[in-house]
Image (cartoon, rainbow, N blue to C red; front, side, top):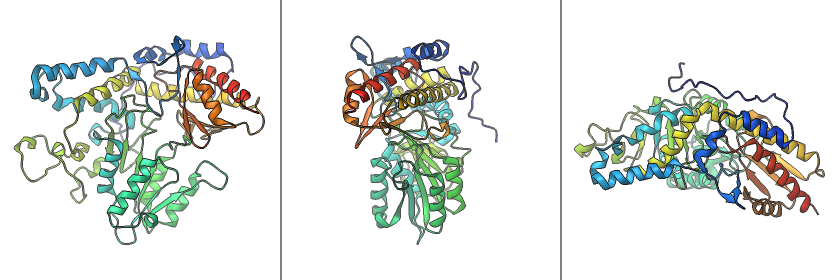
Length: 446
């Protein structure tokens, strides 16, 4: 089908491709940065400092950096509030009633959807519960949800409590796909085998687009197709995928998806979240849903009628009056994405990740056997920005990296997570990180 949400960007980032020959040297990394047409977008962000210089911030998978324009955008909202009070919803330079529409062009392109299939609202876990109300409809023995083992804890809590609230036993209703013995990653064929095994019992297949712990990217299109083939719905938590890797939620025929916007989307701690609901459900009155005033049709919203008449779009799943301040923070980041070119950002994300894998592979050749394990797969189609590292004496290595100005993430029992991202990280930082990691591993190898 024609992808109406896509914009053709000029000057597409063609610095290199996945087949180019990398070199493990600081000069080569600097040359890549010199040729990078996105390099100046680093100046759009506030970078934490270390010893009078920029720290190496590789935590886009946890909390993205603050766009410099965020403060200005918040001040615009405060000024409007000061000038007009509640009338700020309807008058002024940017009436708040229409603020949501400013977010949709860039965001729908980021997730590969039509603008009317995307809504910015609430927080991630709240949205997941709302989607389960609509898309988890247990009937008889078809009441099970298949998900990945070791999903992010919030996902596990959402599924467990939601199923329990439906009067079912979560221990019976939840089917977890585990890695094989002595392995870390989940085999794709094991997912499909589980779907077939439980085909008569599955109501929903629900997974993370990218696993938060390992960084493994799942084939969402294939999983959705397999779920639909057995009569189940397919939904995804895209907290670690949105803004990280290219998505085509509409074309992949996904039923629903939810994401936060404070990681790769750089919209601030506790930022407003987002959801995708495929357009085929927008006028489906057989779906259950929880309703709120802000999801009512705009033309009758202020008639204050008893009967709920939802917007015939993803906005029909909204509940409460949104915060224009949170919208402003989200817009501050989305405007940078749009200015850089969303395809370009994804392309550079991949190139930074490819170079990171290269320097880590070179580093592993210099370490004792078993000194470092990196996952997800080296296959660039099965990962995004994040790399998880398991190293000997990992906490000491992590602490050493932190003391040397590297912002990374520690996850028990032995994993260091890092995620260089295209909008504000550099190839030289990737090379520098590998040198600091090598030094820390050697220091604590005894």
